[in-house]
Image (cartoon, rainbow, N blue to C red):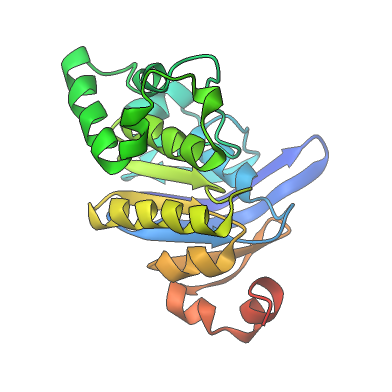
Length: 234
């Protein structure tokens, strides 16, 4: 088991955001988390990254309790998040954005990984000297994923990678996610596009108002009547 979340709770002031969440991610899996706005999906990812305090429960990474670990220690262990809204450094070049993702690694290691990122996202190589703020939304999402890959993550946390993108670009981003999965990257994916997320997931969870209410394989949840009605518009 790579990641195990046990009874995790978190709150904003007096308002509970997570209410005893249990989740497991095995090595090499792509696990999806779906749910409506306000369900607590981003809060959970922030808690896994160490930037959101938890009030109860535990987070285990490869059997090690990291509940109280600082965010930078989690990155050193291999937990890397692609944040919601991309959050690229707009004035910096594409290549400088990528290099920032490799700040814990040597220059030679970073250079090798950078070439792999360019091979996955050729458009980034063609625009490597341009300011990141000049990229399209889809290209910025590729850059955000590439920046995370520069850290050589053992567990990649993807927060709403399809947000605000046109359908064609959503297909491109999820094709990239599938390619990462095929390369044995362990992925925990959060996305409001339940149809796309469940289609690529080995397993999935449904989060409602801070609680996990359903779990199963991606295919099983795609056929679940409750999921169809609430999240797939069927």
